[in-house]
Image 1 (cartoon, rainbow, N blue to C red):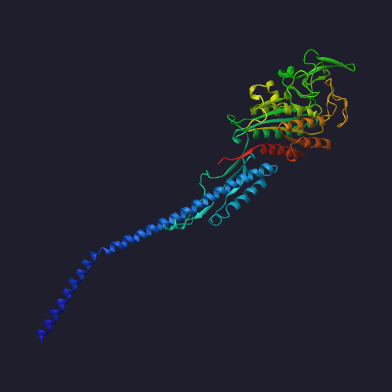
Image 2 (tube, rainbow, N blue to C red):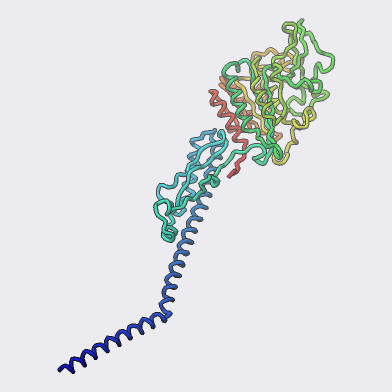
Length: 479
């Protein structure tokens, strides 16, 4: 019995030893089996591959959405700025146009994160540009999972750079930045009826136009303005008087008319004869008439003061603003004289009278606009006899004693017709006009109905001048 027990114990011990040995062999075999390593490497490779595909998908979505957003904002600011040019300077309406264009432009864009698109549009640069600000974000789920980023912000990307370099901006460019040159003659009414607030309003409006139109960089393309103040007469620089005056250009400095002595002043009036409504250069038989006046306090003074001497074309903004600032009022309204000089200062035929920097370019010069802006607050009511004195007519339509046989308004219309025939764009601006003849004169003189403004307030006058400045501008994307 004991022998049987001993044998059974020995047998069980042997089985245990063999089990241990078998287990060691299996572990040894598993350690030498390469199939496990391949499985691990394959799993890691699949993860990296899917991560790269996910990143590529996120990046492609980002690039596509970014491109569409930038294209939409570019189109929107251009549309808004163009609206600003054509709607009379209504900034709110222009912004609405930009917003509408933007929404149309992003309709097919990949969906962005809800409520993240805060791109908006606004008028900038003193009313001469349409700009954007804000951003939009797109979700990047694969990037988020691949890198284990946390939080809502980390799972999205902004479509535009944070430094604002992607923000679109459309500028209404004049002068050099518009890649064209401008020559603008600005006729300004300084008659007695313009005294007080009306003169203040006009100065503000004209200065605003100068600040917009005269661009800083004049190196390649130029934007020049001439100032033509007018009232009873026009005062040219004294240096050119001998070249432009007809009667009295030599020794005839006085004349007696109906027992009254009149003296030749430093101002001029219209040109009579066959060249009355042309821009032919002054010369024998083509001179302008001098303005003869009665002495006051033993002095010979014309109506337009020395400070209102006309200023030929210049890009000197300081000189232009100073000229406007120093204007004062006097006299009646000989609007045809201002109209004529607005033309003469743009005419290459009169160029020899001026220095090279003020000399108008030839008609038809490539990338050049010639523009006349004619501003007045009332009917044209003064014209001259062949002796250079007012004809005394109380009519606005019948002036038989005038040197040219017709009244100031009719002469102005003929001059405007000649200007437009030479390719000059004519804008006319009325200020509190109270006479239909005045309205008819300005509307006829204008290039078309869109070039005529009838302003009833100082703000409306400033808006009219600004609208003209915007209309003669060209559009470009500055960023």
